[in-house]
Amino acid sequence: MTSYSISPAQAAQELLARQDAAQSLIRFTEYTNPTYRPAPHHTRIAEALEAIARGDIDRLMVFMPPRHGKSELASRRFPAWYLGQYPHNQIIAASYNSDLASDFGREVRNIIDSPLYGNVFDTRLAADSKAANRWHTDSGGSYVTAGVGTAITGRGAHVALIDDPLKDREEADSQVMREKVWDWYTSTLYTRLMPRGAIVLIQTRWHDDDLAGRLLNANGDTWEVLELPALDNGIALWPEWYPVDVLERVRAAIGERDWSALYQQKPVPDEGTYFKREWFHWYDEAPKHLRLYGASDYAVTDGGGDYTEHGIFGTDPDDNIYVAPNGGWWSGQTAADAWIDAKCDLIIAHKPLLWGGEAGPIRKAVEPFMIKRMRERKSYCHIEWLASIRDKPTRARSFQARASMGKVYLPNNDIGHRLLDQLLRFPAGAYDDAVDVCSLFGQMLDQTIPAFIPKEDSKVPQRDYDFNRSTDNWKVV
Image 1 (cartoon, rainbow, N blue to C red):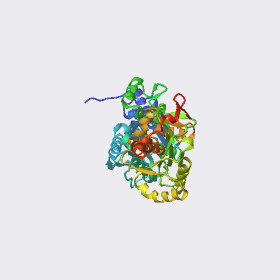
Image 2 (image 1 turned 120 degrees about the vertical axis):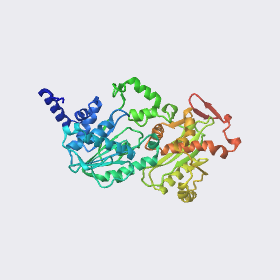
Image 3 (image 1 turned 90 degrees about the vertical axis):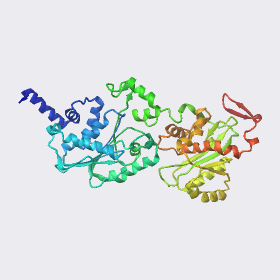
């Protein structure tokens, strides 16, 4: 039988490694996973998680690119290390579906059940509770997993971990899914927190209005945010694994929108994706004798998240589009009577030839009162209701096509800059109500306006105008 012995120096080194592992999350990760090689950004994540464990902070967001080590530290090693420190406490760990959350639960359980963990902490698993999605320590602590959107019953949380609440781009672009995640967070997860409980949200940024974006814009909790872009001033976050040339290949392969969101933690590139900044022109004064139209995107909730938007659009003989000429735009979060009066004001002031709106339930809800009020105020305009049968990006194609050919002019004022901000962020922006108005106008150009205007009057005769193409100034002769 072969016997093994270690020298006093080796024994002292082993004891020091165990002590360090008990005090430091990075050292613990290295000790329980001997192949682990931390990078500087891993140390920053570990220090933030240690602050959560100490109670120095109680709300933490970590934004970082895929495959850069966030789950290994935050969702696997940290829960095991935390329960070593506080074996009586409770953890809830959630991800976009129950299977992934259970995988994390199984891995954390196996770490705690390993001999190396036993060298560091006295915490052990309860003998009768070792399921992957729900288990207990022998000191009464617990670990429970949940898929985002599912119920969490029976336990509270001293720490709630959320690792990637949205699965992919399709979910992030779905307002229904974003609302589902938000409702689950506010009504289910948040209500499970113990007094002075902490929340850790680890994710890549998909959308302006993803869970992180909405939380940062909400009144209430103050969040510590650790934002780690893949490239920062040309320097790679993890050059040993993802050097600059590899990241640039990724960028070329996935496109600017996903690169900016997933790798740079900016859900919208500065120059836009669906709409590009370079496509749009600015104007200070709209030409005279434009053919004017209107369009509206209605919100039914007074003071709710969405805005009602009314927009006036002008077209010239060369099919250029002037948005909001002479201040022709209105937006607000008001009751229906207020935004109907605002629409009447625009009709009276600008006398548009046609007004577009989206058909469907909202038409049935508001049309009778709107027509009655328009008659009372003598704000007469033909209203065309356009069917909504496609997703928002598809509905915006017509306006996008004209913008991409340099045909759209925005007013150089607050209205224009606000609209451009929404256009550049579309479809990943938190707000897109103004874009919806532009989309409706684009659909009107394709479907309704050519039929509404008699063929012989579909374009103002060129002889009526002297058009200076270099300056876009019109002179009536």
